[in-house]
Length: 468
Ligand code: MN
Ligand code: MN
Image (tube, rainbow, N blue to C red; front, top):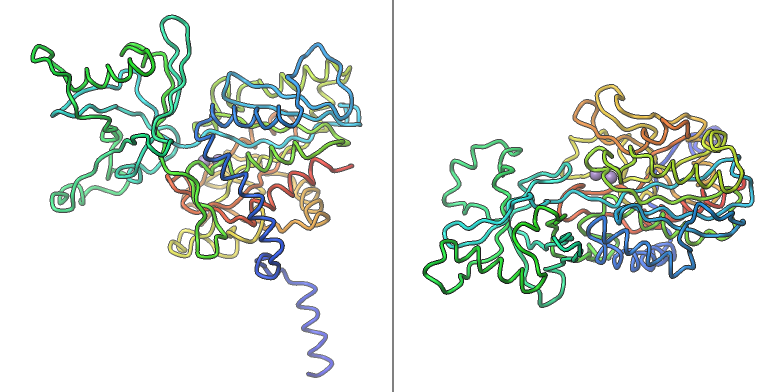
């Protein structure tokens, strides 16, 4: 090699960005990632709905010594508090050494996931089966939900004021439920439908029974039998479906994926794959400079509307009240705050590569993925973070040895999507989208890479521990 050639090759190394898969060269790192993900899998299995995830998160916080937040207390640096919004969203905070006027460091992920909700009058009988009518929640692909085992989760708020929890299909010996589909032998007409129309909303009916009460005078003996069983177990009557939130979710548990166990397959990883690392990073941060706030919010999948979503003021009320009790100026605190909008990105999928733009894809195994903007059709409906903020966060990542990548969801004009970032940015808070890439996003079995999950944790921790 001539001198000239040497110089050029070192220039290449110096000037080009070459994507890497850090786990390939570092077995210890992968071991760390696998260890971290054991807790994550347990979290997935105990928190399949936003209520269950909020409860599981709160239990982790209490275990770690967090106290219920009170607006009447003046907190000291290092104090840890938590707040549950209507059983479905969670806020945890650690008071920093800096005055709150210097701003908060917020990590916000969401714990609601696409699923099937029961309609308010769901139970019916047809051809000696009992079934439940559903209304899908979030952007799911309906054809993916038939012929898989399903579980029933949720709450009934009964006439007498008592709230009973329901969870059927998770214990090893529990029955499960399902949505049926046509056999290929009779699907000629269905096969001619468009994929988006392959299974229609009114065809997402959950099979829950086929036994009847033994009484010839009862007109709907199968439906009555189902109601009798529910009444025996939960004390509910049919009218109680009206005051309930019952969610149908896949019945299977989180599993390792791959011969090498490098990945995780599970329902609801969007966005618990960011929620769990964010919460762990909040717990692990003991004496931050800035006050850290971890929010696990609800309703992201339906546009962040509603009192437990990020378009509600609940997070900002919490921040304002915290400022009041600490004698800080809430406006200045918001202006100086920074937020990581921690949500999943689309992982580049080799079987569907025409949907992506390879140079700007985010890849499973390359680390946490930064999205400067999300949105659709010419960057509409996105907050589009400032380059300065991207610089700030990625410098923190570099300093902490975090593998990060940056990209877009897929090909321009193929689709798109949004996150909670814009609902935070509108409060004058610098906000950046960042999260774990996911294969088969919004499906009953989403796939993530363990290395990326560890990197998410390290990112959130570095952000929490930032000194400036
Ligand atoms: Mn999401
Ligand atoms: Mn989503």
